[in-house]
Length: 347
Image (tube, one colour):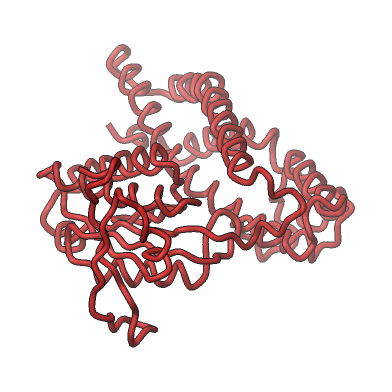
């Protein structure tokens, strides 16, 4: 049963309004001029921060868009910046990064909550034979009063755990410029993913991606690294130690090889100084790792010369020098094939 079955636009609008008020702490009360005045922030600055979070501003200056919760959030953000916790020139970039992350999370959560709401409505319809406005209000009330606080609490908990983990990785760097760090960056992507998407059902594709992300995340985190981001068929990861990165890459290939139902992987690794910007990584090491991944044969791991030098005395791996690669941006990129060794950590 579709959520809109037997419901007119007016009823759905009322329910949307109720959900919005619950989430935003009250109804929309203020125009853009009013919220800027209430938060004691110049209008241009308020609009810039709002847009950077990923929200549109109505072209009508008299449009009532903002709630008391928006006023409080704007005051808190400006106070955070003006108090020196965040550089003014970084505020827009920081709110943009936060907005993009939260947008993706919200899209997933809405899909989950919609599924729960559909189940509630289907049960109500089966019991009464009808689906009236009151039944919908009851279902939405249950959703907002029970599920949303739990989701919010879990979200806060996971954030705190990640904050603690990130702090541990930065231990000993207080007072240093931590935007630039020496890391090993890696990519792993599924071979033939594009053609595969044309042959399998959407449900099967969802299961494949879930299994891929779950398995790669487990291997990377257990191996001493962390996931930077997942982009469809590819995972980007990083590690502080060369040996950890090498073993993560080999473990990823081993897991893919032993799972005959999953496509093969290509993996590329490169070491060097990278720019850390709002959880993402940038720099030549990132570019080289990406190029090596694209050039790798299915089921193999390629590493750059800098990482190969770091692993030269590691008995747990073996390295084979390859002919220089001609890839985008590099006419002669030195590359090495990484394989398990016969030392204590090898087979």
